[in-house]
Image 1: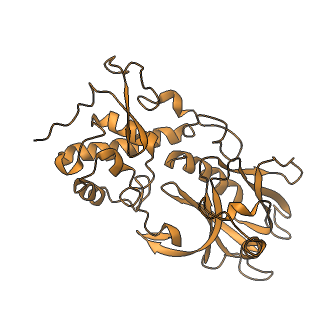
Image 2: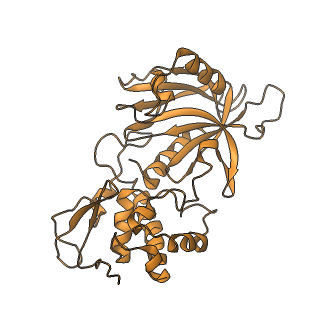
Image 3: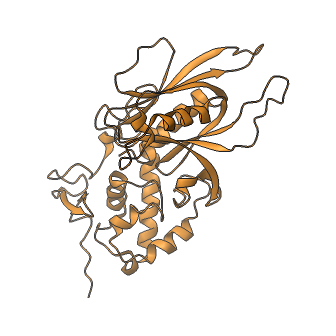
Length: 314
């Protein structure tokens, strides 16, 4: 699953290409993309409603909280009206899932066989430097684990977010993040620290890859109990998580196959810098001890038994 760094890489590209454009039309090629993985029976009226809701809207920008991304939509100003869009009312939710991609294309580019939805965009207005400039934003999803939707915006943790994301906490890379509050909440957790880091209502954006990397950098065993761990060590974990995700973002995120790419079809290459994740059976880069792998909460967890000593509680 794409984590914060991968979603942010996509968001940056989508924002650069689409902010200020108007959605002049949309096509839902596969209506299943409008439902979650547990809700795949979508009738034609849902697709028609989705298209009607987004057509004519101006894209104010692409935004993200944790692994959650959306396009903020406003009313498109008419002829003779102010060029400033009205206050945002809706969000176009984009959940990438395991194989979803947002790709920017020219209208005459060939359509990939796994394209599920197409948004026709137009930049500028009559007489402007970008008069009539058109492009397409396409949602490609081989496995259909991702989905699209239109939702109202609500206030949560210091900003407007789609309604379904109102429970998601701020992430370490956004201004609304409060390290002291996150540390206090983490320190009360009595579940293992690896599971706590994956709790998106505590700190968002951290997934399996960067949880393992953050714990290794901080020297904390994944089975440590936060409520029985010194706060200074927990603070090191949160700081390491922010740092590793920033490092990954700088190189486009982590790509293990061709399914994760940015809007130009390019892969990230932070996989070359991973210290423990996916390296089970290999030597630790610090001490040479064999990296071990265990399953925690259904997730594969990688760690060095020497650099990350197992907790001992009485």
